[in-house]
Length: 470
Image (cartoon, rainbow, N blue to C red; front, side, top):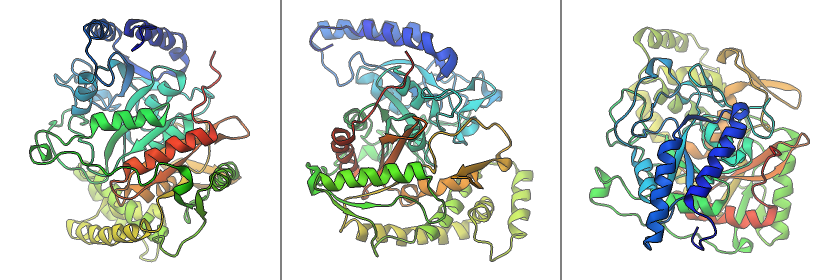
């Protein structure tokens, strides 16, 4: 566009044509907004002709359904809110529009953003562009599928249990879970809940893209504090990347979680990537006494996560959870048991758990004095087949053995519990030609370090590859 070889209208028309050609199968864009997108593209072309320059001027992109976009429904997949239409944009949406972006529409999510898959009764099932019989991830699965399918180079997602990272892993794209509190989530709000400033425990919003450079671009646009709260007194001052060359990075590599195994294909991809890093000169280490106890951390994460997610459940459901928690064997330290305990967590117990988290954060600070990034799996396997059975009935099969479906949350919790930044990047494909990714976790507010690492890794392993749609 800057050189005049293509206009925003042409790019937007091409994106719309691609959506119309492929989305009957993929079903990523659940709320198209093509008429307004074309109007915004015409405005962008006129602005460029006047000499105006903004970071995203005329760039078509998508937005996760859970963000408020004025004039479009926000349902979070709940049928009861099919007619809820906000009259103002979320802060993140307003910022990308102010930067010149052309919003093509909203992307599909699971009900309540509560699944590794993306389907609901309102908008149906989103499918993986690499294989429609497989899931695209969740809860930002519509966004990852849209990126992989070529519906624009950027999208907005969110993450509390890996909801940016697992879709990126499954679809072979990039995503960044920012440091906790770095991006304002005002307007990424459940339907019927006031879109007011506030701090959120564990949950973040974040950018998704087909290149890590575009992740960085979008992060910079989103990262100023909310002008209605912290932005009154604070301005963005993220430190630069610790290094600019791959050979200077000190990398700790984990190919599995102690409570949740990785499949052979995932382990092989991570270990092959580690070998390539070492061959490129990076200092690669496989173990460290500084690594926090990931098993204890996973149990703590389950408690705090479910405590957060169950805060507004109906009273009768809460009482049932309390009874279930009271009936647990005190010696049962399984992740499923910890999730049940989390649903009934008292405020006193939450404060104690939060104190344990503060100690964990200090342990991570000590580790990141010796390392720059920690690599670990995003999910146990490449994209799995669709499974719409009841949540309690589901299992995940890893190399022939079944495990609790939601125990995979442990991998997301490595970064989520302490609030660390984590960039998901594609590193290979399985024997079934499905993408495999890894998450690069960095020190608190070391977002530019993990993003720079992803940019250097893109040069090493090739980065995003389009799926065979055409």
